[in-house]
Length: 634
View 1 (cartoon, rainbow, N blue to C red):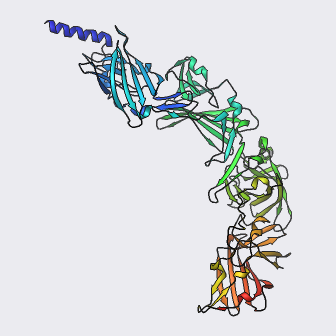
View 2: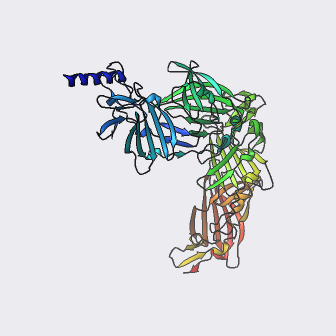
């Protein structure tokens, strides 16, 4: 009878300690943030250690081997029983019945000498119960329970884990974002980093109404800490939700920042120590310092993003470095960005007729222009890298700032912008082509501007910013003679032709005049397949940027069009010599040109051009006499 009374007394006392009886069970087991940031420099993520199915970690204490049950950043269902009303147990002892030793919402966190410590407070009846989870950095294990100790109702659990090893964070220096391989554009948002205040905007999300307090450059919003912090005491807030001017919830941490940049703006994404995050989408607008345009909420899986869309004059690119993975070259055009979305002006001409076109072309390099919006827009609400101005009253987009293809060769870069607005003709869209040519003595000079092909508007520019300075002019790195394209076998293999003496050093070229197409033109060409440097470096390449010229047409001593490619050779043995055919492999004005060199055996002549002809459409033949076209015995 006495034993029964003693047991009842213990049960009753435990019931008083735990609370009023209840059968309520928890619906979720993750209750507290498990991501922690210190000094905006060290980040810990213990979330992989949270048990999410109601189970608990078990440790034994005292010589009786009594059980101590706990969870990390959450609570455990195994601490709940029919005698206890408190279902929010992060930790408990089990003898004689479960008694709460920690509640998840009381979680606090500090760094220790080699890791991180989580502390929880529990039931305070008769004894101030609490527990410390002391995590020590150990990269060799996910979770290893070392020991448990108890002193005056405080339980200390020592644990080794790789998740207690901090990640070192490198904050963005003074809110400056450099160009990357992913994006060529860099931004200087330092003007926002000097602000000690914060921005505030009302939000409505899933029926909830709250204010979002945020800083652009990750400056700590101290105001968030002045409210009741429902997400736990945080070391730093980049942003927070504020409900009823009473409670705050962290939505962004200053050091957990990623960004994406384009030619028209930059997106900053701040993650928090929970599933909430704050995205600030800034668009270039020279008319305002900072103006919030709209807000929206994005739900994706378990994360919730609170997005603020704003315009700012500081959100215009300040850096522009293009990388060409094909050539392995890069080029920095930051010096050609005009402030305040300014524009360059080119007076366009028609390459075929030689006449000026009845409109001007306004364009930017690495950004957008505002002048096009001053006129009546053929396609409203588009962004302009360039536009035609028709009669000073109508603007037509010729290039979008976000759709550019870049090709970089030695001392030359071609920026090909595509329009995404009103089509040119029945289906094709317009192209704005900036052909940048190295000139170390010139900052910026427009050489010519033409509609080379219908709806393709090419502007040729000489500038020091197009100089790649890689020292590779090709004059000494390549052999003058290539036996594969200089020695040709006769039909029966008993004879051969050796054209090696006709190969010119330093990518030199021969020149032939063709008195056709009205005013005529020159063709520069090589024999033996060596590159013709003059086609690439001395003229404006209207048939596209290329480094593989075997030959080219030159109009008005300004424009070059490829007529033969060094990689596309066909040879034919004739009755008195041989014929070399090089195909351009580039269509220009619906014409894939072919360069023919018809060599006739003349034992008394080194090399002499006798005539030029056009035996077919887009076929250009140079007839020449040379002793090297005479067969030799094998």
